[in-house]
Length: 376
Ligand code: FAD
Image 1 (cartoon, protein in one colour):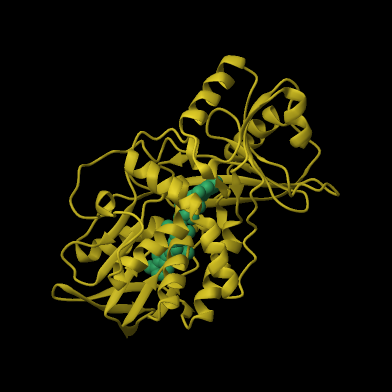
Image 2: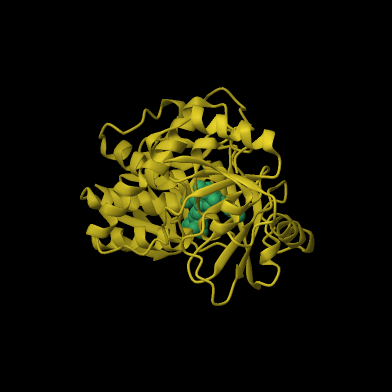
């Protein structure tokens, strides 16, 4: 069965890997658009304490983080092991003892094996783990928190997909539909037939689907995120820092520290670093971690989160053979690898790890906007 996947962010790359591994004939097309979310994502994997009240989503989110060890083993088998993944823990930080108490209660209520050990830390202990931290901030440390490099994750998934026979190409795709079934795609004017097509085109999905009469209600949410470097400092084991609110600090290897991020709904596809976006991110980061003040600013990335009321994972109604994966919002690096596996199972007719009914793209209760918007 020939399957075309349009969009090679984390979701399309994961679907490609899982389908190619299962023996399907896969072509992956990506237009390399500016603002690809996967290329800008911070990479925090710590879903257990999210603010969502949507139980189906929460389960998908947590299962996404818990899928990583299996994924890493499968990628290793295909010779792709460079994901920038590390389970270095996460610290919920605050200077308010009552707030820390409440965070600790929430964490303990939601305790899951993958969340790892939950430890309340005093200010000195917290700074020992993350030296740039402001004096006087205590922390709840979650040992299971992790981080991943979105660019390296997607590249590893694509490398492993190629290892299993997938063909990758660069180009702009549109859908080819005959009556009520998918016929393939047009790629830069070239017609490519296929029995199945999966649209994993992130925030741009409506541009593909609207011409065939389907609207996703996915909209771009701009995120600006700043990369810093602390020269000569070994930061690999530093935990992710999660202060109250939506900003955060994510340490990677070799002194790279990522400070994020703006959440600009309504900015459309305006691919720019703005003065106020940069100022917001840096001032929030320095308020929590003044020790980053001397770091070198390396770059600011801009990405469009595909924001929806709920993820969409399933068949597009009315067009046989056309599936979609989308709407992972601010949680896509956590959920994306699992969601790609779920899409692959859907297309091959395997029973999935998770019931996709709540994420069916067909007519559903709308809108539950807020569930994803509330997430970090
Ligand atoms: P994308 O990565 O945007 O991929 C879509 C792809 O489709 C693109 O490569 C594009 O070029 C291609 N495309 C579109 N239209 C066409 C077409 N017509 N033809 C061919 N190709 C096309 N998630 C977390 O779990 N943890 C985090 O800490 C985190 N932090 C984030 C911070 C920021 C600043 C941002 C922006 C996002 C963050 N996310 C995080 C969310 C995560 O990055 C996204 O949810 C996820 O990357 C979405 O993946 P995707 O594959 O759906 O979309």
